[in-house]
View 1 (cartoon, rainbow over the protein chains, first blue to last red):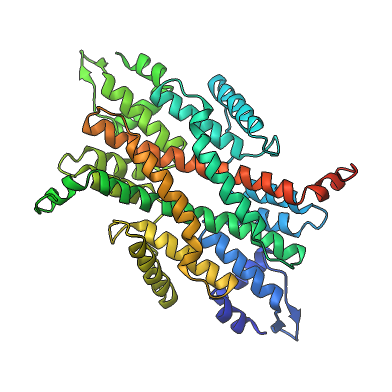
View 2 (cartoon, rainbow over the protein chains, first blue to last red; view 1 turned 45 degrees about the vertical axis):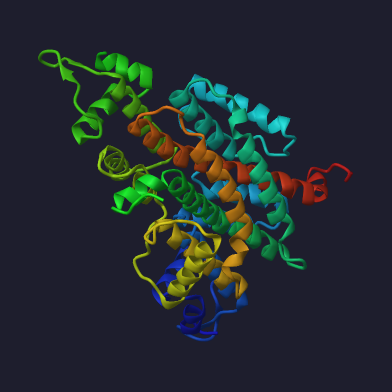
Length: 220
Length: 220
């Protein structure tokens, strides 16, 4: 199809498509003469993926490039692509300065993950994110062990098991990897949003009387 | 205590403390003479909170200011503070341009939330985040109803119920609100990190044979 139709079916403006082509995020189409090129299904799928990463994942161009490179490197195994994509997906990243107490928190998290029997790369950036969360809780609430994360880990385990097994049945390598990346970005955003909504709901239940009074209604 | 000790106990550099004072994020200490001021427990707690928002929540100064203003506005009810804090905590925000299909997704999400019986403000920005996630899935995978979020909603409900009821038993209004904000930021980061780790683990289980082959070992 021509660029105009590619833009229409994906909802990405022509100027943005041209920008992605210049940046090499999108491979060039098949030349059909001067200033004319033909784009196929691969282009449509790639553009949709970029759009999700940009809009839902709120990734910058450099991060999008990293994720796409992980997807496109054929010699990387499916499982390692997921790790590389996670790496690129941020904001989980290794801190610049590692204080002694952060190092201690990281060691506690590593033990926590090992105790759960999770097979996770030693370099997974999410380990540092968790360590920083643990350290923040320690600073704020005093001594806390990584066990405070146990209920969250159980929930995460259940969700991830369902997600990994629910990928498309028959799929090319590229499709499977795209599915994983999309799942990470879209459902992470959805889960965070749902948690906030549920918090608001339970806060309404718990402090509901005060809310009704705020609005001048009689408490139930 | 003096500024040097405030800096030491909170781990925030003196230059940064001064910056927060200039920006009004931290109230001035009690003057003890020219270039000398005394800081109390409120300052310590506030500084720790700012640090969590900056480092774990990755918020900008303007967002931190918004969250602190929500906390400090005494006439706002506890429940509404949570809503305001969520609003400031981003990246959940209303989109600039609302397309017709996003409007449709938003309507579907509103119905989904109403069907669950959740008491949630009509303006909650997380509604838009969810609508964008739903729209992304629709573009990528074809027609999807909001029911695909049901397992995530159930998990979010369970987590939020535990979180809201686990706040400090006897606490001032300021402490309760701080607890909620910290819970939102720290556990959101922790949950996202744990989900990625669990994904990696389940991906290893599912594609484990391929991984072992990658490393030249014989498959089990």
